Length: 170
Image (cartoon, rainbow, N blue to C red; front, side, top):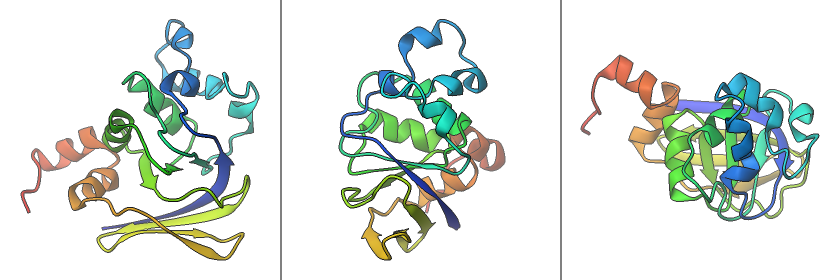
């Protein structure tokens, strides 16, 4: 199993909670991720959603996705065309919601990454490799368990179960 992608770094800080990712008030208007993506991170920067290009990568500090366990905080990121979030750490529920919905959570030291840096990420059975191509440096990342790679490779938990009907018991 191998997943490779690249994108532009979009910097965020520490403790980006789920209500910053998508405001709870917006969920009253719609739960459609295609509608909600226009409000991505509007509490932090009202122009952020309109500045996102497909393939951009969110880069955060510690405790990304803290707060409530609302799944829409992951689906809105995916709907915006963002394939992965790189952070020094994730809240446990956001991390699991990310895997379940096909968003790749990459735990690594993000402190030296600058806004707009060209990043590439390789996930495979050997681990996770992050390369900041703008700065010509490799960044060590935490490996994902094989079952999580398999789930991500299928696009999330529901597509995984539709195909396999059960977990592979390695």
